[in-house]
Length: 199
Image 1: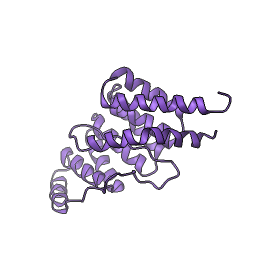
Image 2 (image 1 turned 45 degrees about the vertical axis):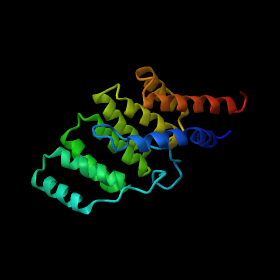
Image 3 (image 1 turned 135 degrees about the vertical axis):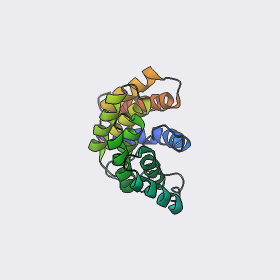
């Protein structure tokens, strides 16, 4: 069985659980976003069960004014990144997240959001490099670890790397929503391994 077929098999088993959880947690403040599984060859857009959030242009203008007047204001940049991310305008989100990260590289939430936005613009290697920066700040950041698994599985076809990341999530927070999603991911990896030739 080809690696991409295995990944698509895992995608089928994970998609509903992870998408439902992603949509339920994306708007929480102070927490990182979680990537939804997308195939590497697919268009660089997050699969969405609902239309993207409309962009509030008045709020965007107000936050841009704050950012222009105060070049060190991290929060306005994070909010702009979040707004563009939620509107599925990932290149614009990346610009604002990069500025926020440059001002506060010790925030694993912003760093992880930036990595997820890279992933959604078909840059899995850049996403993984950004997640490494998040984990350098907080090696137990479970949303980053969950995202590492998703990008390794769906962006890089690296099931062993995905399993390692998801095992870390389960070890750190087995009963959390992230832990439950990681368990489903591990189950998918095991099922894919059992379906591989010679098993």
